[in-house]
Each structure stands twice: as structure tokens, then as C-alpha cells.
Image 1 (cartoon, rainbow, N blue to C red):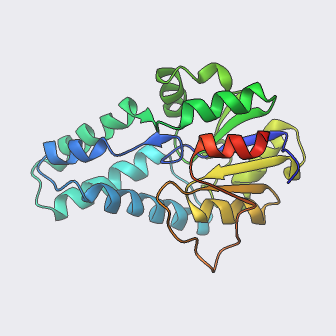
Image 2 (cartoon, rainbow, N blue to C red; image 1 turned 180 degrees about the vertical axis):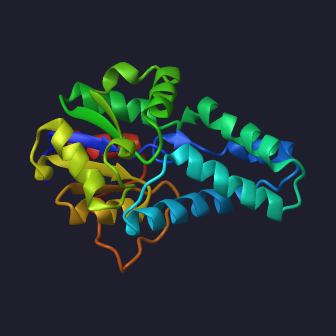
Length: 222
């Protein structure tokens, strides 16, 4: 595949390692496995709003779903508990493979941007803590697009902001739904599969499959 001009990174779980939030759940008296339940609920409601032609900031959706999940788990004072878990989002680090991959892609001359369903400030903090902020040309959020990914408008926002044709952008994400959405919007795609899972047959397949960001960089710069 010809090298793209821009690599567009999803942020939540693709760049950021959300596993440390498990401890935050335990600290408020909830089981660690609820982290996955909560995040799936955040995506569900964000997607639902987009399908209805509406949008809410990630923080509002995440807090609302979190309070519901914690209440169902029997946690007392769910508002304070949710605030404690949410604060952990501002302390997350990148996955171990991210630094090597990002630096390699940048050194190969590719433009790098993020496109997140979260806030730009969260992406900025994550990459600054990792010492990678200077490697990215732009940090983009769907909050400026009016719809969460995988709505087409979110990817078209990235196309407009980069000033490149959609086919010159490659979306890199761990989420098959994100890969599918980007493909339908005309972007090239890479699925980052760290767990060795099976890609859903009902979604559009990725152009590339990688086991890490470092592996993706190796494929794109070979």
C-alpha cells in the first residue's frame, strides 16, 4: 500500500492505556471489570446521540454513564465516586508501543494528528506526559465536528482540518467500528490489534493490520 500523507490516531485505548482506571473503580468500592462495562456504555450512548443527530461532550456522557454503572454496583455517593474515576482519565499514560511507533512515523516524514471522541485537552495532556506532543501536527476532537465517530462528519472534519484528500489519510485505531467508519468516509485504515482478536466479518476490513503502533510504523516505513 502506498504510504499515506497523514496518520490519524484514535486516542482512547489506541494511544492511551486505560487499564489503570481499574484501580480507580476498586478504590470507590466497585469491581475492576466494570471499567469495560462503563466504557462500552459511553460508546453506546455517544453513538446513540450521533444516530439521533445530536452530540454531547465526552465528559458529560462518560460521567452520566459512570454514575449509573456505579449506582447499579451499590456504590454510595455515586457523584463523588464518579468524579474520582473520571479524574483518572487525566493521569493515563500511552501504551508501551506508542512512543517508538510515533517517533518512527514522524521521522519518516508523515504528518500525525489525533481524532478523538474525547476532549482535545485530554489528548494534549496524554501526549505531553509521554513526551510526544511535539510529534503531532494537530489534535482534533469530534466536539468540533458535531458528531461522534463513527459518523461520517467526524472523519470529514479531519479531512478539512488537514487539507488533504480523504484517501491520503490513514486512520489507526484499536476499535473495528472506528476502522469501519473511517473506511466508509474514504480514509485508508489500520487496525491495531494488540490482543490477537478476530476482526468482525460484518464490518469493512482494514487496509492494514498491526499488532502495535510500532508494528504499524514498521509496515508503513518499510
